[in-house]
Length: 407
Image (cartoon, rainbow, N blue to C red; front, side):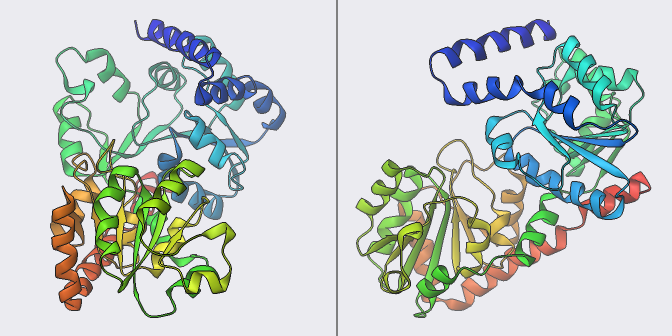
């Protein structure tokens, strides 16, 4: 039934691609090149480690492991695969991987062909990736296979009475490196004992990003007049309805907004909502940003460095499908706001618990909490320190994984 489901999924992808679905078209185009890319780049007599990430977020979780391998074990080469077009297209030129391609659809034929070419010495699946035919084949071939930064919840299929087939997949892992004790207990409850609680490798990633943050002269010029800076990252329309009105009424603050989607419609929507002079990052001059009320980041790749210029941050998505990466902001020791859809995000729950993260459910609640920050600078400092300490205290998952592996 599982394999039949994979074939049905492939048919659906082909169908929606015919009707112009952009991501489906990207995926099919990329899949046409998988095996030719592998045959071209995989070298005989070379030992490969295979990392698989679903999308860009999981790739960021896996990067500390990849880069630690490259630094400490240069005898290995790295194959990096993705499921989603957004992950692949963002990381296809990643220099720390020797081969970057899509993961072939999980059919028995594709699995056999892929493993025969790559012949990996070790395999690492990041967080939520459980492709059953691949896992069963890796187990049969006795290839060490690990789950990294995984997190489990009782509602997942593995822990349902009808999930026995999927529980078999969990037993294919040589070891599972999970984020918390709850995940370990759930796995133990179904007889999976090869588990270690090591935390989340994303903490290692954001710590490294903060150490390597780029100097951004335009952003520095925007912030140099001494006004307080509020940074909204991965922002969506519903987020902007919550936070923009406060800053329209409080000229002591300046806004930096990085929309989750960068297109003309989204940027114009932001410009129409903000009262005051808005400039776009890619079009602005130094003089323009110095006099601007709002700096709109109309490109990708800068947000993780931009947070360092903020006094307070807001991470979007919490009024929609779910919040984005709160750790990218928290690492700089600033308070982080986010919306209510955060229950499945452990880092958000823990940030709230330590006082570094602030959940808001409405415009009124946001304005009340911002008014408290405006009235008490010590409160902002205290929340920011809590956020920064939370990140620094939870770093080190990659080193703990390497210790268990004996590397």
